[in-house]
Length: 101
Image 1 (cartoon, rainbow, N blue to C red):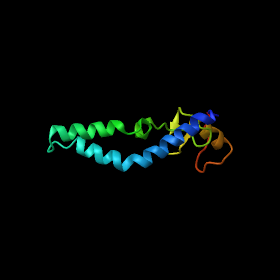
Image 2 (cartoon, helix red, strand yellow):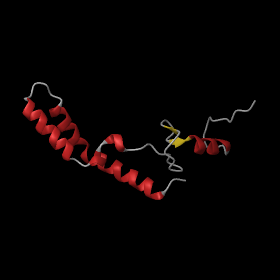
Image 3 (cartoon, rainbow, N blue to C red):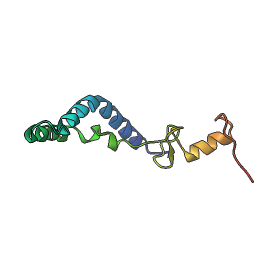
């Protein structure tokens, strides 16, 4: 089980990403528009840099919804390999059969 503080920090980051998504996209569009002058592009980049760092989607970490584990995360199932194996062994995941040979 991951530390509660790390899980909560990641939740705060997800909330900030949602909050600033529209503003960030608009500023990125202006900054990358080649038809605008260099001064306008630079001003948009400065405003983009003033946004909170944690509002960037890159800073959000994929975590297991069961345990909070940050590594060996399966995106399709939204859980780690360890939680997947345990739930699969208990028969709680439909269609998953533990292989043995």
